[in-house]
Length: 120
Image (cartoon, rainbow, N blue to C red; front, side, top):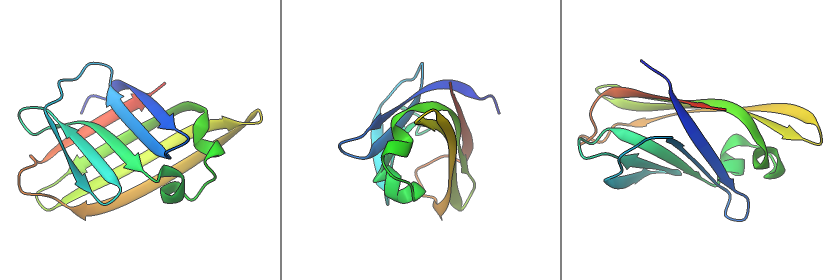
């Protein structure tokens, strides 16, 4: 599947990571645990938010503040949603890599698909 160029923002105060393709068509959202997924009209994922991001990654908030690059993959099978996030950040001129992998039960209204974002 093609990896879409994306923008990612980290809200330091609220500890929320948001990632979305540079071009997208938003229709609605749904939440599973700390994740909020943005959908288009065909119920395909077009963006993702992670609430309490630093706690989910197990790193201080400062580690997520200055993102250098990263990738996000959401793989939706017949039964599960698998989320893989890898971020490269810079803290005090040192690069750090943080990774997160989570698997959840797939809601019936979401189409099996793959969603890949490249953060640069």
